[in-house]
Length: 118
Ligand code: 5GP
Image (cartoon, rainbow, N blue to C red):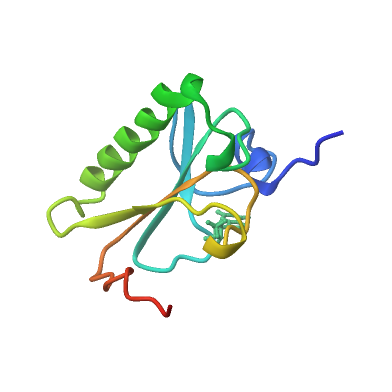
């Protein structure tokens, strides 16, 4: 049987978290170890491991995830100062939780994330 991740349990509220938004497609909640003042995770309610597993059928869902990030950014009043959306995929990106998610990061200058060692 498939092992359920922590995000499965957060979505169905078996594990408590600070949910900031939920609808029939996605759930958004505060990251337990925020990397900046605003650090929200947006996840689909259906299980997808990561970007390697998306198909044409998920186009609307992925668009919805971006739309919800944009709405939350406005609600949190970081839309003018700016923010970043990040999706990690597999080992080299540092993906920790094997459940597709989008990070919404903001509330302070985030630096140049493209400046990385070769
Ligand atoms: P990844 O590195 O996989 O892109 O990001 C996973 C994120 O999930 C990390 O930022 C981590 O802090 C967050 N996270 C891991 N476990 C929990 C948890 O139990 N609750 C919440 N709210 N976030 C978690």
